[in-house]
Image (tube, rainbow, N blue to C red; front, side, top):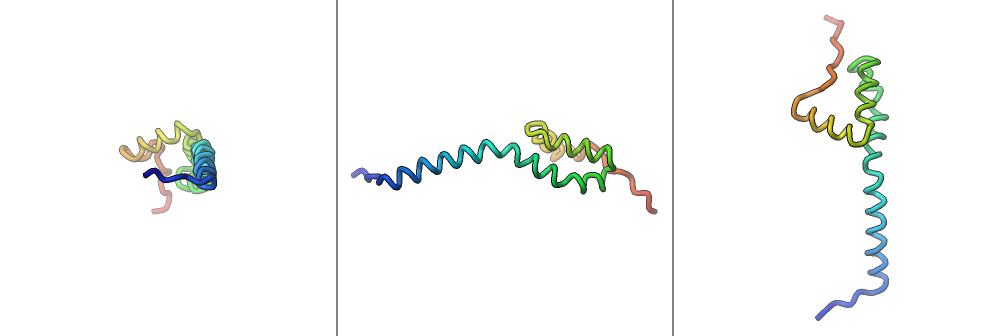
Length: 86
């Protein structure tokens, strides 16, 4: 016996797909927002020039994903600044 789908159920299902599509379109820009929020900590750890470059690379949607995937295996591509305190 086949279950009958009510109009309300059909609307919720279609609306869910629309919401999922919209969310999927914004996912790459979520990384950009996170990278922009972390610029300050990158600058503290890496220095001004290296921190801005690192955050800039992270903010580019596909490049940032690739860079972070490589860094999971190899470590930081852009080294932290040396501690001057001894």
